[in-house]
Length: 401
Image (cartoon, rainbow, N blue to C red; front, top):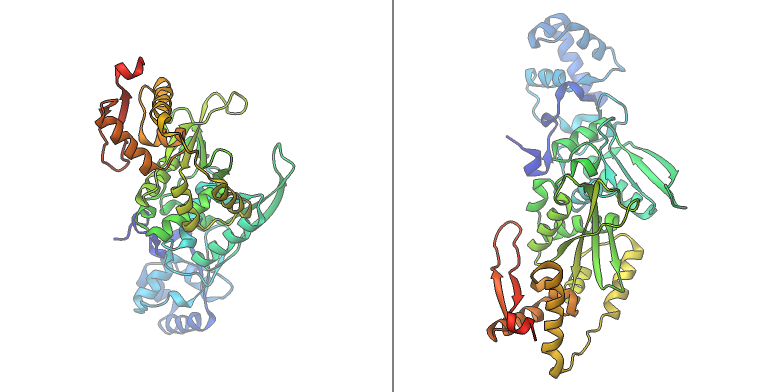
């Protein structure tokens, strides 16, 4: 039995059949009509256990047929391959999909970007069945529409523009149908405000190949990310209610990045109220290191031209400070000491940020100072779904020097 949350594929039969309405192409409709009339509407209704009025209205023309009734008709006449005969499909509330691409398969770059977009600048309201995607960047709006059509077919949507709150820019809002709403819920997305629901990335996303993973990450960076040239990092932020210990979105992205051998850290990123309300927490996932950023530049497919440009500028400006050999130990211990004062320990990624060195180089220096008994490990590397880096502290005699 298909599980859309695990497979990323949704068949018509996975949807609530009584809430889906279908129009068939005229030739196929007429074939079915002739077969039913040859039996008789009343008799046929009794055979398939459907009210006669449903059959009569449908055969009268100009009326859609409910999916559960259509499936009974097709089963009786032994029609198995009929999906290409659909002219359009819709839910109870308007906005149809012409020539739907059934089954709806999200295992593509377009599909992964749609999921990331809904988790990013999009959403699924709890009080109305109309998922949306919004952005001030017209390139991202146009690309999202193309992604939706790539997965669903020629779908209808509404578009409106509003002045963005507290800003001088105009935001474009795309709204989709109740049918898309049901499909999104079936693949594992949640309805409701994301600060309350703290949604997780659907399971099937973690089964994608590298190309699909980076498509997902690219969309998240397009929506929720920033490229900090001065700080030499890429950051993705997420805000949730303070009843949640962390952002599930950022935890999931961290896992996706690790799968692609990219390390990242999640930090508190709270500002004073009203910048961040007292009952909320903002988290920041940060990716550092020249080699990692250069690798991401090759793997990502950012649609935001400004962020693409900033990443190029960041990489061109990246130059490591050459520490004097006779001061290297002093500089590293000073950085370790500072981090330890803040956190009670330090890790390889912490030190990577502080001394502006690549992860591999810092790992080698940690091993060197550990072998010299300058530092000690208080907690070993933990293997798991989300591995935890080893934690170190400076030995007492060095800490007092």
